[in-house]
Length: 214
Ligand code: AP5
Ligand code: MG
Image (cartoon, rainbow, N blue to C red; front, side, top):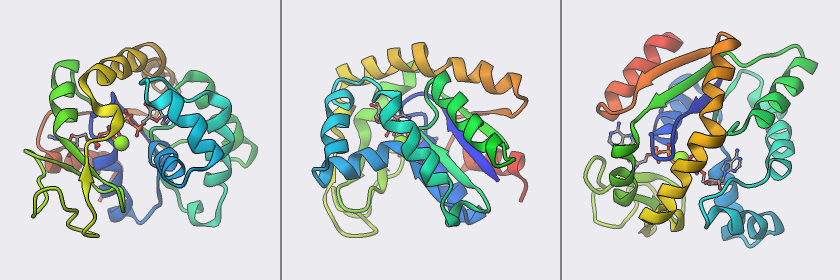
């Protein structure tokens, strides 16, 4: 089961991808999380990615494509995976399709989590992310048991650098320009499924399970 999560920044891709990974026992591969881990560890890739991420811009395709193509070729991806935050441009989608075609595979589902722009800024300002394990919370919709402390690993929760309102607005513009065209791309290839991302997280998940099968 090879699944792609589509949706605006803050639509809930990560929230749903984690649930899918757990239920269907496939790896959750988030390019945003990979970049943030590289930034934390001070790698060359992290340094390069940070300059783009902090401005709300996409990291150039050449820094992303090989990384993902290599990752999905690993043994733990044999039964599928859920890609969160990749592809985000038409060239990225074409590169993924080409790499999969070489080994006789294809994307099975592209799930678009649909949330209007009006809801996004509000969601992002309430998001808190764990510096230790990357778990995500929301101060109103999914609060941790103790304020600013991760339920899972006990590390501190922070507001992501790119979740400031002005950066969120830039990310939304970039999403509409560069990522939204993927909805047409995957409609044409017959794998696009849309779910309403404005309802409760658990209801969004149930809509996804209906698509993927129990
Ligand atoms: P990335 O980390 O992928 O960020 P993003 O796409 O902007 O998406 P987010 O992680 O912000 O949101 P999400 O949809 O995962 O929402 P979440 O589940 O957290 O990328 C960051 C940056 O890295 C990019 O800007 C770019 O620079 C770079 N990058 C990454 N991949 C790249 C690529 N392929 N190419 C080029 N550059 C790349 O939910 C958001 C909040 O809402 C949370 O607080 C959550 O608890 C809450 N929430 C979720 N669902 C609901 C619900 N149903 N109701 C109420 N609240 C909800
Ligand atoms: Mg995310």
